[in-house]
Length: 434
Image (cartoon, rainbow, N blue to C red; front, side, top):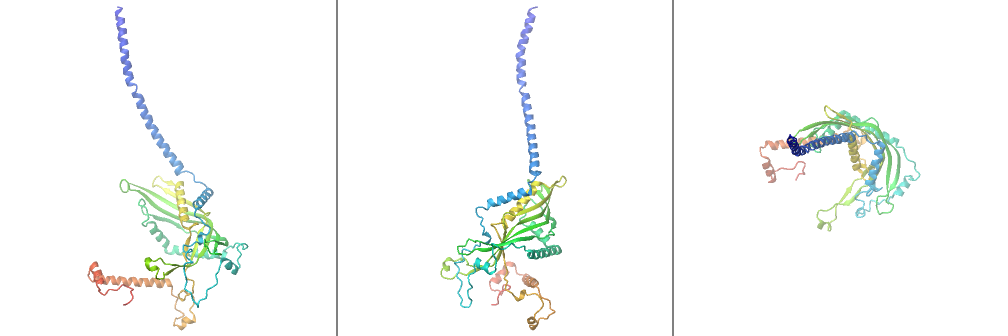
């Protein structure tokens, strides 16, 4: 009987290592499955956190205050233009350096006027730049207001501004991921800009000649109005196939206030030699001169301020309204557009027409000279633009009739040009008779 318990104890001892081996083989499977589940959940949680942080801080983040934004942009402009910005940039001209090289023909009939320098001009006009008080420019504000009011009236009558802006927005420069752009709102405002605190002072244009400083007028500009421009389009995703997804977008930008300092000066006409395409013949013959017309140059100082109100609506069913980051992107783009065009050291030049009095520019009742020439007093004064339009229409009509006759002749296009080249009696429309 004693042998049976000893046999059982031996069997139980021999069975224990086998159970331990089975447990040791099945035990590592539980940590591996738990580690995969934990990693999957952790990855999903991190993606959700990143998407939530992106939506919260990038899309719905609070924009900075207008004062902070204006000061930051002003500092950025000053640091960007510090290397090449000059105070006389508005009066600089690409032909200033070549003025002394141009030799004008001497004439015994036309007397040479005395050289007028900036101090002489200021003395003859009784203007003291140090003691003269700034001017209010009230009279100029009235003229500007009348011009802007007439522009707004013309824009509402024929809707020319709507047609032209629609063509520009849907032109070749439109990105491929945008569908056709439709203008939903245009408001040209009701108020007018106020110019004040005008002062004139000489600035150096970089010339080596003595007393060559030019005169520059600076004035403060302030406009508080509501000028709105709204559009509607769709963002089209064309990958991996065309029209994969479409996202409607509506955007409206309103100019609330603009203030800054405007600089204005005149750039006189300059004669400079025309570059010749044949350098060998330029030394033997006199180079022709080309004249740059007198122009008006204006620009704004970098400390200007532009306050905008941007409204946005993204989506069709679940819509996101007034996203702050879209507003910041639009504001930065508009500020960059202005900085690249009319903020010092860059200027805008407008060529001025000839101010010499001409008969064709005369308006008013007919004079005695017109009556002597057979012009009736009751005949209305013809508009130059109407005359030019009629002339253009007549030229187009003649060209159309000429091409219709050519098409009716039955010759193909190449044979018609070949017959003209061989002396078929064809003359260029508008050419001088031989």
